[in-house]
Structures are given as structure tokens and as C-alpha cells.
Length: 379
Ligand SMILES: [Zn+2]
View 1 (cartoon, protein in one colour):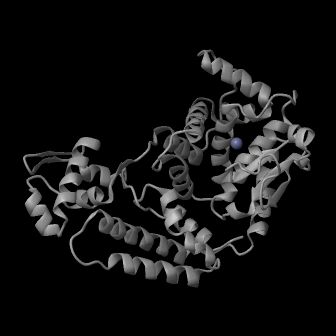
View 2 (cartoon, rainbow, N blue to C red):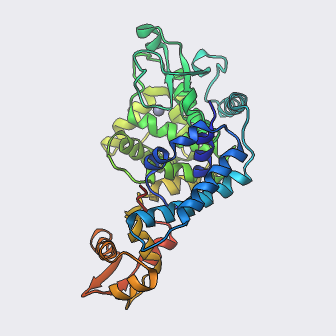
View 3 (cartoon, rainbow, N blue to C red):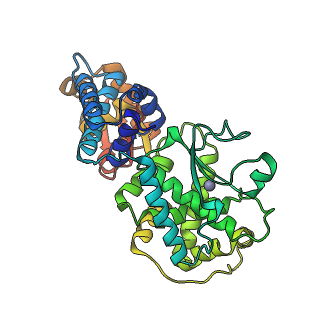
């Protein structure tokens, strides 16, 4: 169900914030879940929180810097939510998007049977057994799962993960799986081919770019791939496949990308094998789209942010060459011990300053702040 937390996440996805750790943010503000999906209540709570966080006394320590920076980010989120028209009927909205995507798939000759059960969407409280513990936000099931576990084929969304900003992008990804599956002749070829995930991610950029602005999609890419990673794992393989197929798009255009979908898993498998042995690919070339060009560039050159502690981020905005620990601590009202550690962190962990003998000798933090590469690890 839509609730206050969903609304907060919408604002987060739309805003140009500086935080790096989204899981921590969601944990910290989990209580928003008890609020209704309603602007007035959510905005009131956000305002109360950022006013409380911005109101501090005493010297600025790590935990105070964390609250000050969160207060700034919450204000940005507040503005985005205030400007936004909330989606009241989430299911109705998703159906509209689904119909629109189906038309796009048809017009590019990617599916012939638009009434196939593989394309149907259903919303559940949990995934059917034995997938009930999986951490996916949506899933695509096909004949294989039906045969093995009696699962209804189609695209399954979890009600708790429905979100007007993220769900249309997940839907685009899952519908691409469905189209690939429909075009696959040998139904025994499984969908867990990594290149297929990359095709779904890249093609979802094209589909989503027809309903969302580029900036919003970029924010989602940042959110999914370029934030702080406390753990490395499956997400990295998705990211790598996403970059690989985005590069394929650069060379082969939408023609090449569509051919990968039209050819089903047999084609994807063949291309993956050839890619792995650096052989020429059997793909047509042509048809580039301006929006997809920009988004795939972003995917290819994008990288994880440079993440520092809240106090290091806070200090980076204020330091300049020639500052001493003493002058910084006094002018910015900082906790001395933690400031010294934060300066060393900027020097040794990120290489963005040279700090020697209690003095800032070189400073390149402003470049990273300007390019939005520097983020703080919010607690
Ligand atoms: Zn997938």
C-alpha cells in the first residue's frame, strides 16, 4: 500500500541530495510508514524533522554534521514533494503505463502476442513459493516456474514495493524479460543469463524515457547503482551487464538492442559467447535516440561516488589552502579531535586535500563538490 514512506522515497528519488547510503536513510525514517500517502502529513513531518536537525548547540561533531546535512537533504526532498502531484491510484497508473509499453513493444515488432499471459501483471503481498524470501521488488515468472511450482506466469509486483517513480522502471525491465521469453524458441534456456539482465536494464531506459524526464531516470540509476555500497554482490553484476549492453547500444543503436530482444535467449546467448571471446557480433546497426544516448552515456561513465564521513563532507565545503586545524575549528565551531580525523580522512582516503603539519596545503574538494562526486555517508 502507498504510505508516507513511499512518498518520502519519491521525494528522495527526485531530489539532488548529497547522502550516499539509501538503506540507512530508509531505516532512519522507517516511521514514515505509519503516515498516510498524503502530502500535508508527510510534509509536516519532514519539516518538523529538518527543523529539529538544523537546530543545534555546541561544537559540530560527526553526529551533528550528519544531522545538519540530513536537514539540508530533507529540505530538498520537501521541495520536490511539495511540487509533485501524488499518484492516488497506483494500480490504475501502472496499468496505463503497462498499456503504453505494450504499444511500444508492438510498434518495434518486439512482441506479436500482446495478450500473452507472460505479459500480465499481478500484485501480491509476497512472492509465490519457493520465492517468498527473495529480495526482488518485482519478478517475472514463465512456463518453467508454472511447470515446477504451479506459479502463475507473468509479472509479479509486491504491494509493499509499489512506488509511482520506481515501479514503472521495474515494469519496463520485467516486460523486456517477458518479450525475450516470448521470442525464445527453446523454452529450456533459463533467464538468468547476465547479458539478458543488461538488455532489460538498457531497454527499460528507452521505455522509461517515453514517460519520465531524463533527470528522474538518472537519479534512479544513481540510486540503484552509484550510491554507497556497503556490500558488493549481485548488484555489481547487474551494473556490469548494464554497462556492457549500454556500450552495445552505442555501437549498434536501437536496431541492435531490439534484435537482441527479437532473437530471444538464443540470440542473447550467442552474443554473450561472442562477446566473451571478442568476436564480431551478429547484430544490425542503426537508429539512435537522443535521450537514450544521454542515459547510456551516464550509465557507462557513471561511477560510485567518493564517500566521506559527514564531518569530512561538512569541512570540505569550508576549507581552503592555508587553513590550520586551529583556525578551522574556531571559525566553523568544530570538534577539534574529530576535525583532525576528518582532515586525515580527506587526505588519506580520498586524496582530495594535502594536510601537513596542521595546515591545509592543497585542496581539490571543491571540484568534487561541484561535480557532485563527493557524498556523505549518512547515519
Ligand atoms: Zn531481471
